[in-house]
Amino acid sequence: MKSPRDYLDFLKDKFPEHIIDISPSPSYLISEDLIEDNCMVLKGIKDRSGVKILLALKAFAMPSVFPIISKYLDGVCASGPYEAILGREYFGKEVHTFSPAYTDNSIKEVVDFSDHVVFNSINQFYRYRDYVKSNGREIGIRVNPGYSEVEVPLYDPCQVGSRFGVQPDELVDADLALLDGLHFHAMCQQNSDVLGRIVDSFKNRYYRIIEKVKWVNFGGGHHITRDGYDRDLLVNILTDFKKEFPNIRELYLEPGEAVVFNAGVLVATVLDIVNNGMKIAILDTSAENHMPDVLAMPYRPEILGAGEPNEKRYNYRLGGITCLSGDIIGDYSFDDPLKIGDRLVFTDMALYSFVKNTMFNGIHLPSLVRFSLKGNSFEVVRDFNYIDYKNRIS
Ligand SMILES: *Cc1c(COP(=O)(O)O)cnc(C)c1O
Image (cartoon, rainbow, N blue to C red):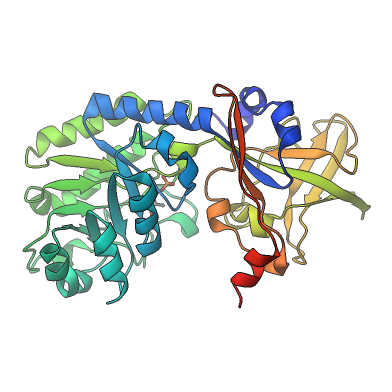
C-alpha cells in the first residue's frame, strides 16, 4: 500500500499555504473535503456489499463534522458511556458500544444511549443480559478470532494473554439465550487479505454460533481508504460471508482510522533552535501531549516539504515543549534553514490525536479547526485556555 510519504504532494494541495497561514498554532486542521472523500469510498463498499459501516469514535470525535460523516455511514461505535452519549447526541444514527467491562452504573448509561451492547466475557453477559434485553437493546459478545497479524503488541488484540474476546472453549457449555450477535476486532491499519485470514479462523472457532446469531461485527483496523487497499477483495469476503450464513441479517465494519485517514494535519511553529551536536528545533507542540502515537507506536510523522535526515540540505531534530527528555518527534531535513516563527505541518493527524491529548506540564491544547476548500469555509471550532487546564484538576 502507499506509504505516508507518497501522499505528501497530494496533501500539499489539500492543505494549501493560505489556510495554514490563518490557522492558530498549534492546531489540528481538519479537511472536511478529505473526510467526505473517505466517506464516499466507504459508501462504495456499503453499496457493493450491503454491510453497515460505523465510525469508531475513539479515533476521531469532532461533533461539528459528524453531519458530513452521517450522510454516508450508519452510526458510531463507542468505547463506553461518554462516547455513546456523544454519538447519540451528535451523530444521530446507530450506536454500538463495546467495553472490556461495564459497571452497574456504566451499563445503565450505555443501555440508555446504545442500540447494541457488546460484552467481553461470559460473566458480563450473564450479569447484564436481562437488563439490556428488557430495555430493548441488542446483545453481542466479543470473541477472540485466534488470529491476527498485528506486529506491535500495544495494538494486537489477539496476542497471547490478550484480555479481549471470549475463547471458543468458554462457549461450549454456555447458555447463550438472548444473544443477538458476535463481534471481533483483530486488525490495525491492515489490508483485506488479512481480514480474509481472520474470518477463516473466526469461522473455524465459532461456526456453530455464527449460524445462530443475527449479526456479526468485523471490528476496525481496515485501511479501506488507503491507496492500494484491495477493496474488491473486501467486498468478496463480505458477500461470501453473507452467502455462507443466510441467517446473518446485518454485517458491520467499524473503522476509525479509515474514515479520517490523511484528513487532518497538525500545524506547529518553531519557537527556538538550539545546538547539541546537531540542530534541534523546539516547537510549540509536543509528541508526548499532542501526537501520542509517535512515542507509543513509535513512528515518525511526515511533514509537508520535509525529507528524511540528509535527504535535503539542512537537518534538524524536532522536539516538543514539555519537560520530557524523550519528547522528540523525529529527525528531518529541509531545503532551507529553519527560522524561528516558521510553520511546520505534520500530516495524517486527524486520527488518534486530539482524542488522546493530555495537558501534561499544563501545556495548552492545540486548537481544533475545520475547513473546506470546496465550501470555501474555515472555522476555529475550539481554542483552549487556562480554564480548561484548571477544570480537569480542581
Ligand atoms: C480501535 C477499534 C476500532 C477502530 O479501529 P481503527 O484501527 O481505527 O479502524 C474499532 N473497533 C474496536 C473494538 C476497536 O477497539
